[in-house]
Image (cartoon, rainbow, N blue to C red):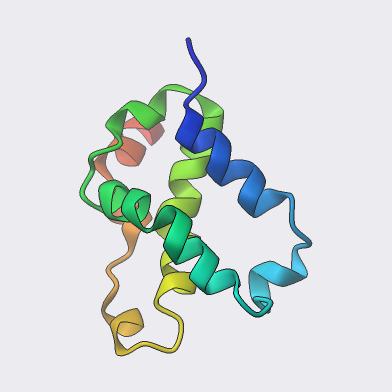
Length: 98
C-alpha cells in the first residue's frame, strides 16, 4: 500500500515537536495548523477520509485531525465550545475499532 502523503504530513508535524507544545502552543502554531491542515480537518469531520483507516499512520493522523487540531484552530473562539466530539462521530474510526 502506498503511504498517504497527507497523513505523512500530519504525523511528523504534530509528534516531532516537544510535548509541552501540545499543551502550551507557541506563538503562531494555531495559525500554522489552520493554514496547513484546516481543509483536512473539515474532510475528517465530514467522514471524507475513510480510506485513512487502512494503515496505522493514517489512523493516527486522523485522530490528530479530529481531536487535537480543532482545539488549536478554534482556540479562544466561541466556536470551540460547539465542536462536536470528532473521534466519537467518525464512522471510519468506529468501524476500525469494532
